[in-house]
Image 1 (cartoon, rainbow, N blue to C red):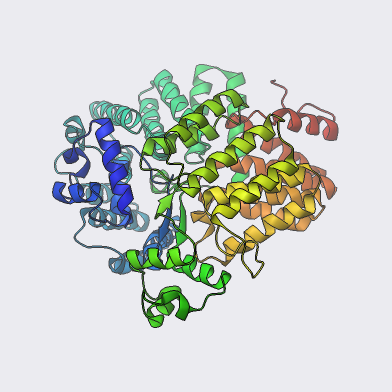
Image 2 (image 1 turned 45 degrees about the horizontal axis):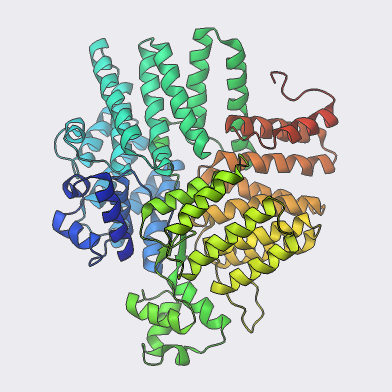
Length: 613
């Protein structure tokens, strides 16, 4: 699918000192991995994803350009996930039966996925833990021969899918009842499993997808043996992983386990705070109009994917129409007009070389992927995340140091890299008061035009903005807001929302951009007293947070909604949203705006929001 990512995979594997055998085993042959790593061979998205996961890394950081057929294969899994959540056995069975049209049946990773789904289907239908376990064991055997614990001791690495299967297998074993000796053995296996994940899943964005679930299960096993201190310790470690990444699953289960530990340990004050956090997470589900998953085995199946996709067929069409170029002119000497028409309608996947020629003729020289920057070194994408995390702590000195390091390792001849670095330089200057917001916006606009130049049609957003472009526009809108030009800022956000909604790609696959869009648009609409629209955008944003497994973003939206109810004169709702917004922020250790929430509560209700502080 994406050849450059194969080269990146190779670089990261060699940096970590991992052998090709340990990464490829059970997924693809070593000879095929060699060709992938040299950039000579493309594999499908899910195979590539599994290879990165075996390094403990995620490709969520990459914004991927995919064809319609590739996107349909990816979104098909989302439909499967929804059918599992709804316990719709008929629909799930049909989706499993028809999945063969979207994958290479010879690939072990796909055989395993189907076998895993069949085990889950059997469980949903019959609630038979023993039968489910046997089917899961057969699923795991598609990629791992022999005992999984012995394999990881010998150096073989596990991907996310394999980890989920092992968790479900262990859960089924536990639920069938164990003798004391069997329970101790199961616990020992889970201890080694948790240690493996913590040591080898070094990318925090990937670790949070699997470690908290593993920590919860180990904690539950400890509690069965009255090892309360051990249960509490592993629970806290799993919770911290959730908090650091703002993740939602399995926050409720972790808080429930923590509460049980604190009661036994006689730590009443901490227990009271834990229950407030639990109630706040429950409120997030209630406010979004959905319920939490009651079955932990199904929770193990939930995906917290937060990647970004752009469909190449749509990109090509949008660029051509925005530039006022006919199909006949665009395709000259490249392909037939009929071929181009079929590509734009999504009836044909574009040949990669042909696609590059067409995009270049439209003024876009872009590789197949990037996430804020464009580089072949995975470590630089991790550095970008480190840089972004400097701002909640207002650590501008460290931010500049990390940004200097990123720039020093980038190819600055690439427009997207210049765009990202210069955008962040401007942002730092504004935050430190060294540049006016008006001057900043002029410079940001010039940077935007590097990759999204103005077109004769006058459309502000004639295609889906890429990540850096979206962040750039977001900075411009926020600068307008703080210059009291709120209407102009709202107009920008509404135009962005329309652009995203026009796309065939669902908002879940515009995760990073949509978080900011929902928060900021809802907040500014409230400032303009457009309360109904603000509430609607906020609630849609809460559903997006739950779908993408982000509780910290939900905390901000809930706090914003309290202002809507204040203006409507609904004090009971205002109090409920303000209180739960505060405790959600507290759970995720987002203390930057906590004082504002405390003051607002005190002013509105003449009492303290948090008597423990």
